[in-house]
Length: 99
Image 1 (cartoon, rainbow, N blue to C red):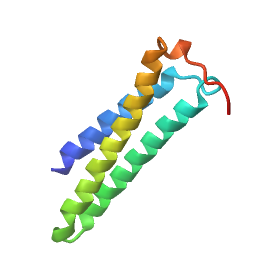
Image 2: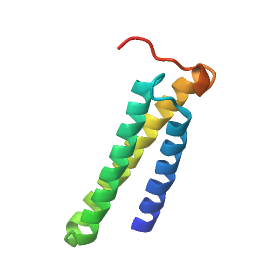
Image 3: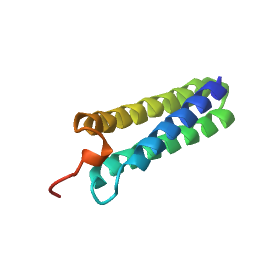
């Protein structure tokens, strides 16, 4: 069961990293920060799976559920960043103003 969740974490991390690599830290610090948060949430998912491995049997589902919830949060953050990037014509067209 956890191998599927681990696979989803790896896939999501690849997608977050790929999108992050297209953005420039000076031009899009907020968007890159959102992707950092997405990666941090995936780290939390990995930790939840570690707890699931050592948990008593009646807590395994809770830890696995937490890992899956964190994957969903990461997906949502990444999708929102991608939507902004796409709305403005790609990563080369996005420049954040303000701060």
